[in-house]
Image (tube, rainbow over all chains, first blue to last red; front, side, top):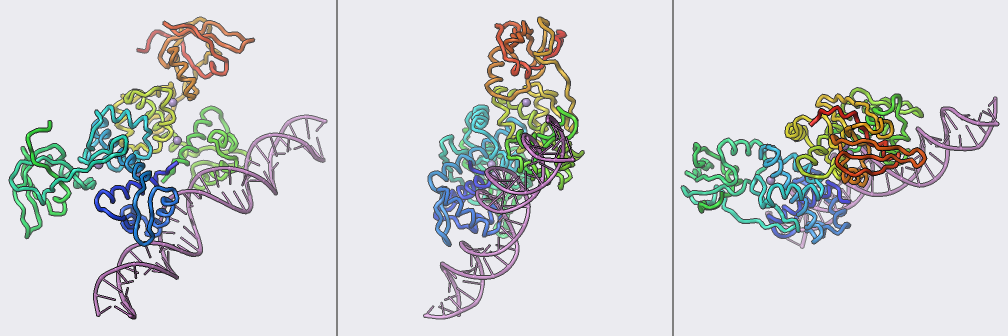
Length: 224
Length: 224
DNA sequence: GCGATGATTTTGACATGTCAAAATCCTAAA
DNA sequence: TTTAGGATTTTGACATGTCAAAATCATCGC
Ligand SMILES: [Mn+2]
Ligand SMILES: [Mn+2]
Ligand SMILES: [Mn+2]
Ligand SMILES: [Mn+2]
């Protein structure tokens, strides 16, 4: 049986691999999971012995086929659970991450299937993160962020890549959530800010760091 | 933080205390949790050191106030989760116990409240087991079983005290589930059997061991 | 009162995860 | 080419849970 600790390590490596290509360093993993460097190194040996990763000492790790599949399933559980908590249980998108971090290790296949059915086999979670398929396939789309998208164009929020509850609550208050229409009014390089206007809401300002966590796509009018 | 292992031990002692008064032996705990006797002894020391039980070596243990409260909360989570899986997720009462055994350690207070609301603050789980209140109070009712109830009287199934999936599926096929009406047609001492007639179903026969796990109450006509 | 017997505890080991601190390695700058 | 500094690994410890097998206890029957 694979423990929840192992699942968290695999998921972490999987997500790092989505973003950068090449080997993932143990230091990166240690800091992402908030453990001491030596702890991560020890776990890399364990995972390598189990055939879930390949480990090149001093260089980094990479998931094997088995490891990747397992990780994708953990991530799938995480994201389906998050959506379930929002859609069925009526929780806020700002408070589901912590619960999902635990439940992703506790939900049986049977239960996950029920959730998936109940939600209509969704393809993205409440933050716009794509949900791996039941077979473990994940397709990430590339979107511009509030820093790189066109100014004064009609946009749709596609994804928010920052789980911080306070940040998500702020966006929610302004109506900036996946699916909603917004436009970028202006960018002030000097001030390091971006001013955003939600359709049907008041304009407000974000720092560039925060703005970079909001991904958008051209609002082609479609999408319910 | 209290681990899921500790929670399972406390719940086990709590349920044993409900049935017998006096101290609970370490042997009883070990066999209920399927661990070696020495393992249970070691854990009793740990729990005693944490102030969750009082431990009299060679004699047995008893929950303290703190231990009892904690155990009641675990049991509450278990039973609310079971009911949620049946009522909301559409799972069978025969397959929820295993899932609940895990989820009882993973569900946050927030999520449990949502489930409880959604279910209308229920007082019993799908097996008729009473649900401890949010404050940790449990009131068990005494019911006669199929072995002790009157013959040929109109009865209502109140509770089934055996989690075995096969047994529950059998009862379900015959319509013997909490709330349903049945009567006992006959008992054959020599054959060690009881014959039961569900209202609107065919009579069938149970061994006495199994019959003792079905609790009933006089069918006073009320109850939806 | 005295064992025999069955339950309980003790002992010594092992598996998993974790840390702090020491040792080692790698690389980029001089 | 050398070396200093940062990253990585190693080492030694500890916490939790678990087991098998040996030691101990408690008590019931004689
Ligand atoms: Mn997790
Ligand atoms: Mn998410
Ligand atoms: Mn459990
Ligand atoms: Mn139950």
